[in-house]
Image 1 (tube, one colour):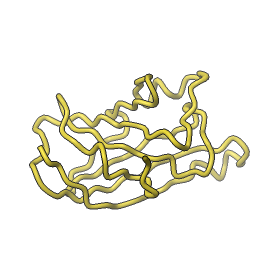
Image 2 (cartoon, rainbow, N blue to C red):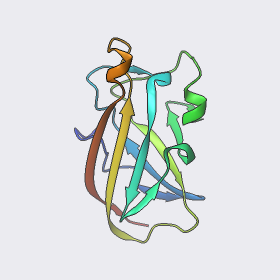
Image 3 (cartoon, rainbow, N blue to C red):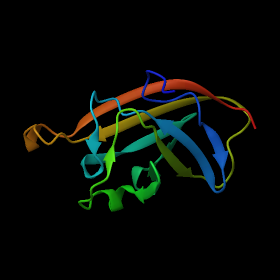
Length: 128
């Protein structure tokens, strides 16, 4: 089940070579994956560049550069994206201040008014 906020409470965990975080599409309908501008993530003041983050939507995994190529991949509104963020050391067990800024382009909005950005902050916990 998806939380209402963009940053999901479930799925925040250490993973080999970094950590993972789950995002819900904050837009009210699905979006073609090549309209994603990317996401910058900050955990406890440490910033992670959008270009280094690997996106998994459904069964497909991509870098943001890969997603810019036209494909038939859509990010459905009811499917969380899993973002794998590279980091040398695992995050410590306990609470973390997490901020995500997600950039999206909309096919029906004039180019000069794009992209649109959603920013959200949450306190998440690493349990193991």
